Image (cartoon, rainbow, N blue to C red; front, side, top):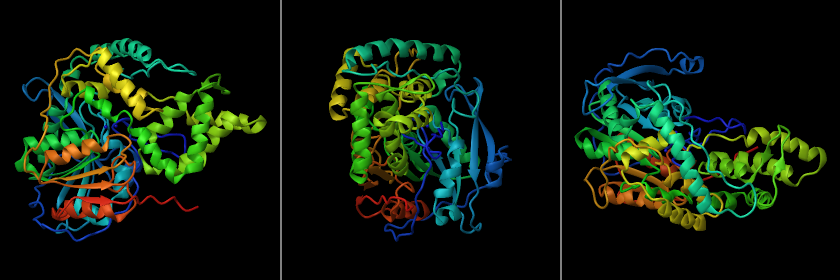
Length: 509
């Protein structure tokens, strides 16, 4: 579920449904023979979008083009104003005969700005995909460069004690009040926009984008929250669906309280990191154990707490790209800041100021809460929330309670009328999709991928062994990538669901 965040560690970029932050993709694709070969998309008409310079030197030099798509603010009342969506693309590199059409991407969130992720994702795509597709993305309504965009809506973190035992019922009770005020302020400042930011509106925007691109049918890649957009598009517009990849699925039968199932996901993903980098994981765990009893003064007058470390490391761990920087830099720096002496400790403490700088809470408030609370009408009571928090704390003893607190109380203070999305509680339509997931996905748990698979019985599912959130081109091996490459180019799906081994390889020095 995403705005772009560059972390101080080697320009680290991280993302996920949970963190609403975008990672820099890495990986390579490979061609593989498929079965059930079908016909590629019909020849596309010319795009009607006014493509022009993006006004940014790096994007312009890289061959990217930008445009604006004007859409009705209210799909039910098209005359009631408009919203301008920022759109970006990189044209395909192949010949006109090779080109199939547009591959439209939503990177997640809710809150992910597509204009901020196309550049690294284009760089990571295999040449065969670049030759056949324009890569296109957009900033959904209320997000990024689209106008109007949500303003003044940063959400607070739960107020957790720096050291000692945590009474999560007390934390949740206080956070509900704090977030309610922040959300009410956000809604008041953006009263004309908030009611029209739900996924039902985003799906119709996507269909208008498809038409403006000149594509008769949609080829779509939805990651994290983008899978909600993707599955709803397949439900509402099956006749206009060419190929849809759902990568790191949300629950197609989701509820606000059901978000709690993802609360402990980052703890599960950290276990994969710990298997690959046991010494670094031990350094982090020892440091956290010490920070449970004391904080570390920093030279800027603040203190390093356990939550600074947890909120950074555990909200990034859903991406294999962060493993090496965390193992090679963060773990040692943290250990030196906590246990070091003299000049070594002072240098580590100074570096920690930048590395562990507090970021906004992207798991609650703002676009994340507005969209989710429009999509799902249920509002769990405080006692239901506390029960879910305690459950996820048992499953994820490090980060489970914090994430769940932000998830299940996210609608506090929002009073707009919901615009519920259609749910699929069992077997849904016979639309063939490709569903990608991971066994210990650090943001959206594997059970949600399984439910998405049941929702589309003609789909095929590829499950990667690891904690990765979003697996196409982000996983290094050919197993996931070859299936996805073949599917979008030929519409061929595997004969059966597939399991892919972990393919992570530490970068060579």
